[in-house]
Image 1: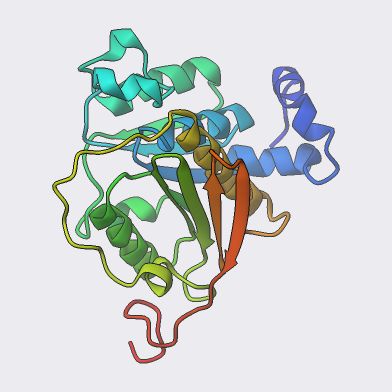
Image 2 (image 1 turned 90 degrees about the vertical axis):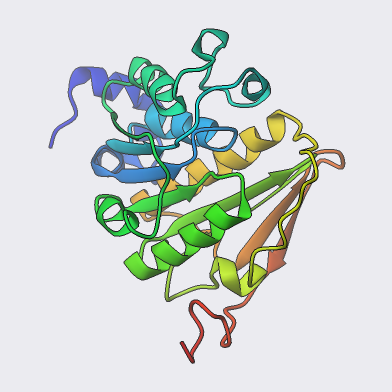
Length: 248
């Protein structure tokens, strides 16, 4: 595979980095990332992956665009209200970079369809907004041995970690089980918070595809926008974990 003149110009800033260069850019063009959720976290993640030239980006979301989404879900515009999120997002990403092939899945990831879908991807980004989906993604990625980036947001805060199944602490090592269902109305988040966390998730995916840097494994990164602080919490693989523990 050779980069054409347009690609050399488009990715010039990547190519200028010794850690990437043309060989690394070719890796990105051959890379495949699935993003589960095309909302607050998925929008910035997908945008930066497409801009970086990731060759195949899967977008999975069963929802349609709501007016209240536009405060934070930057891939969707006012005219997109009531459109399926994956279609709205796909239009923006293809307009941004035709090098990226966008595969849309207008439905939810389930235990039944996960095996076939995950088989086509190198890395998964959990950009969902509910605990049931996050635990399910952890389970199916573990079964498929697919590395993934978790992120969650609330009010002015966010958290993220990267998991390499069978090698590092997993999502259930940290959070064990979903909390009880709540009827509380959502508060926030501040619109820019998922932008920060989704950008970190895209960075983790890019680093994985390139094989560079230190992945955010065995570490929960916590962001507080009010304090403008980042804190790293070391987490360890739980030998008694119901998903990856020794006695499974």
